[in-house]
Length: 378
Image 1 (cartoon, rainbow, N blue to C red):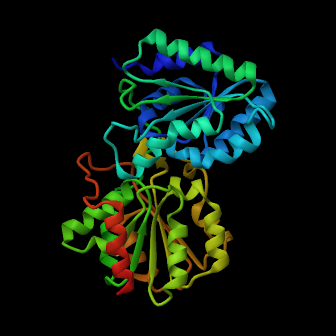
Image 2 (spheres, rainbow, N blue to C red):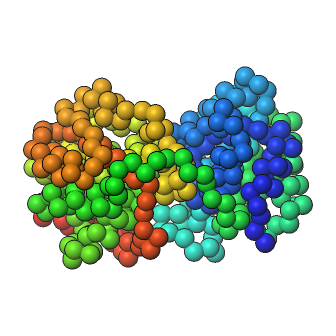
C-alpha cells in the first residue's frame, strides 16, 4: 500500500530532521510537493546539484549541530560522491545527514535506458562509500518505514556519518504541488522547439538536454518526417549538454552547433557557461528554454526564478545574449539569432505546460549515437 508523504515527513521530524535540501526527483515528487507545502522556505533549499546539496547540509550541521535531509535521484550520487567522501565522511569532518534517494532503474523494475546501469550499481555505490542504508517501498508497513527512518537517523547522529534511504518506485501516494509559477505568456516549450527547427536549414548539429526537451525535439522531428539522427539526445548527464555541444563545435568548425538547454540543467553546472565563453567557438548557439522549474521531475521551482541567465552568459563573454517571452518576439529573434557570431545565447521564457501523452525516443541511446555520428561525418 502506498504511503502518504505526511507519514514520512512526520517520522523525519520526530527524528529531528526538519531542514531539507537537494535536487528534485520524479520518484520523490509527491513527498517533495508535501515538503514544499509544509516546511517554511527558510528550512528548504533546492540546490543547483547534488554535490552542492551535501555542502549545504554540512553547513546546516556546522551551524546547528542538526541533521539535514538531502534528497536526490540515484543518478545524482555521481555529483555527490566527492563531498560525501572528502567532506562528510566520518574519517574527515564526520558530518551526519540522511540521504533520501529515488531508486531509478532498480533491478527487476522497468525504466528508461539511462537509469538501468545506475539502478544496478546504486547499492554497491553506497557500500563502497561506507554509507549505511535502508529501503522504503509501498510493500513496507508504516511501522517498518518509521522504524527504518529512526534507525538510520540515530546511526547518522551517533556515528557522525551520512546514512541513506533508498526509495522504490511507487512508494508515495499522489500529492499535487501547490502552484508557484505564473503561466508567463502563451508560448509553450514544444511550440518553441518547433519554431527553432523552422529557423534551421537542416545542416546544423543539434544537442538537446535531459528530460522533456529531448523528448519533444524527438517527437517534433518524427512528426515532420525528418531524420532524428541530426540530434544528439542527452537522455542522462543532466547539466552537461552544453559541454557535449562545445566539444563538437570545436571539432566541426564548419558546422553551426545548437544546444537546446533547460534552466535547471544550466544552473546545475553553470561553470560550463564560463568555459564556453573562454573557448569562444564562433559556431556555438546556446538556447535555454526557461520555465523556471524542474518540470520533468515534478515542477519544483528552480533558481531561474531569481537570476538573470542572459546576464550570466554575458559576464561569461558570450558575444550575443537576448531573452524573449512571446511567440512574436521569437519569430523575429530566430531570424537574426542564426546570423550572430557565437558563442550566442538566447533565453526563451516558456510556460509550465507539456503534453500528458508525450512519448519517448524509440531508438536506444546507442542507436541515436550511431545515427548522429553518421550525420556529423556527412
